[in-house]
Amino acid sequence: LNRFFLIPLGSEASKKLLDAVGQNTLNKQVPPPASLYQRSTHNLPKKKEHLVSVRLESVPAQPNLLVSFATSQTPIEDGTTVPVHLSDGEIYTIPAFRLQNNFGASGEGTMQRLQILGVGLPGLQDEVLFDTDALAAAREDQDDMLTDSDQDSSEDFEELMECDGLPPLKIKASTEGLSLRSINDKAKSHKGTVVTFQIAATHDMGNQLANGGNVRIRFRYRGPSPNPATEIWRKREVALRIVRVKGPRISSLTFRSDLSWGSAYSELCHALARQKLQLEAVPKLEANSRLKMLRSSAASSPKLMEETKQAIEEPEETTILNRVGLDQGVHVSGDEVVVLMAVANETNSTIVLSNRKGLVGGFQGSPMPTVRVTSGVSVKIPVVIPRIERIDENKEQVDIAAELIARTALQWQSEVLDDGDMANRKVRQGRVRIPSRCLREIIAEHQSFASRICKPPVTLKVDIGRKENETEMKVVVGTAVEVNVEVEMQPWIPEEVINNSNLVIEFCCTRKALLGLPNGSTTSRDYVWCGQLRHNVKASNLKKTHKARVVFCTVGVFIVSACAKIAKEGQVSEETWWAKRAETVNVEKQV
Image (cartoon, rainbow, N blue to C red; front, side, top):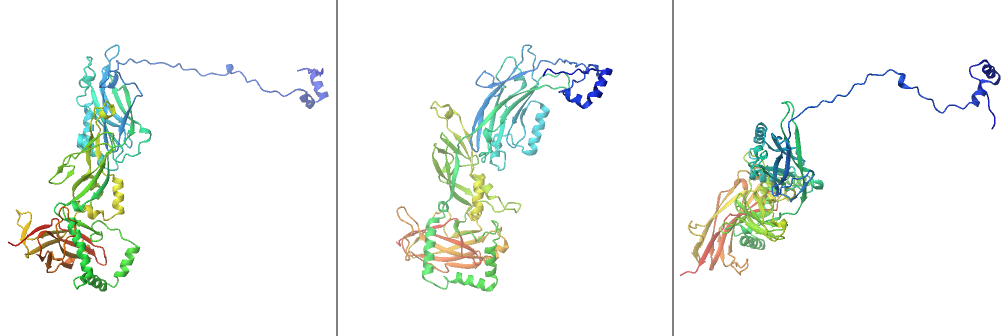
C-alpha cells in the first residue's frame, strides 16, 4: 500500500524508464484490461431503409351467419359442443338447426353461397353435405352417381351401415327447402331456414372413437366480392361429442331343425336311433353291408391308410363344396331353415323390432310382423331363413357370413314414454344384426356350420300315394302302404367328391307323438317293413327311385319318411338328411 509509479507516456523519459526497468516488469505492474470498448457504429456506412407502405382496400359489406336450435332464438356460441348418444348400429337425429343472416348496421351483407361440411369423421376427408352453388351441387351428384346412385336416400343410408370395413361414423344432412333466399330474408321468416342432421354408427364401431371423437359440422359461407378474383369466406362450427351407450343386440342364434314344418324331425330321429340299436343287436347280412363296403374300398386301395395318415398329419384346406359327407349331423333337406334368434334389449325403453324386407319371424300360420321387447328383457324369436346357395351365378364361393347377416338384420325403434323424463321422450332408432367378427370366428372354428345354413347336397321326396287335397292317408289295420322316395344329388357337388362318397338310403316309420305321450311309444308290433329297408350305394351309381312297403298292425297315427346318409370313403361319420316333408298315415279299425 501507499506505493505508486509514475509512468510518463510519449516522452523521452518514458523510454529511458522502460529501458531501465524493463518491459516485463512494467507489464506486471499494469493489470490486463477486463474488456474492450467496441467502436461506435455511427461512423460506419448505412443502407437506406425502405418505408413500409400500407395498402387499404375497401370490400362490400359481408354477411354474418347465426346458427341456433330450431326451438330457440339464442344463437349458438363458438365452441359449443352437442352430445350425441350412439350405440352400435344406431342412427341418431341431431336437433334441428336454424340458419339466419345478420346483415349488420348497413343491412347490405347478403350471403351468396353456403356450404355445409362434415369435418373430423374417422377415416374420411371433409365431406360436403350441402352446397348452394348449382355447379358444385351438380358435380357432387355426379360423384355420388359414380359411387352409389341411391346413397342419399333414407333406406340406403341405413343399409350402408350393414357393410363391413366402413369408417365407424357416417353423417347426412336433411336440407329440404333450405335456400339462400330464405336465409337472406330480412323478414326473419322461419320457412326454408331449418336443417337437420343424422349421424349413424356402424355395427362394429366399438371403441374406435377416442375421447368422443373430433366430429364437427362446419357452416362455410361467403358474401359479395370486391372483384371476380377474390372470395371472402367465413365459417362457423358446431362440435359433436360422441357418447357410446348400450343398445339392442343379437345375443345368440340357435338352429332348430325340429321346428321345420311338416318334417316330423324329432319323432323320426328317435325312431332312427331305435332302428340303429336293433341293427346292432341283431347282426345280419344287411347290417354288415356297410362294413363290407368300407372293407372292400380299403382293400381296393392299398395306399388308403397311408393317404389317410398323411391327411391327418397335414390337413388340407377344404371348401364348403368339398365338405359334403364330412360334417356329422342330422338335418332337413328343405329350402328353409328355422332358427331361434335371441334379441336382448339393453336400452332404457321398450323397442319395437321390424323388418323392411318382410316379417320379423314366426311361421306361415302365425306370422310376426313386429316384435315388442321391453327394457332389460331378452326374447327368442323363431325365424325362417332361406338356405344360402354355396356358389353364386359366377361359380364363385358365397360369403356365408355376409349372407346370413343380411338375412337376419332387423330395424328397431324405441317407444316414447310420457313419464316426464326428457331422455325417454326422444325416439331412438337403428339396425341390429349379428356381429360380423364373432360370426366369422365361429364359422372358421366350426366348419360344419355350412351344412346347417347352406343348400343341402341331396334332396328327398317321399310319396305314399296320398291325394293332393288330403293332409293324411287313411287306411285300415293290415293294409300295406308302398313308400317311394326320390333321391337326387345336387349338380354343384364336385365330381371327385361324388366319386369318393357312399350313400345309405333308409326308410323310417314311427307313431306320431301326441299331446301327453312321449316319443318312443312305438313297439315292434305296430308295423312291419317289407322289402329292402336300407340301400347302400355309391353316390356316383345312385338310382333316382327307391321303394319299400310297410304293413300297419295296430290302430294309430303314424309318420313315414326316408333319409339319406352321406359318408366319405374311409370315414365313419355320416351326414344325415331327412326328407323335407314326412307323410302321415291314419290307421283305423276294420269295419
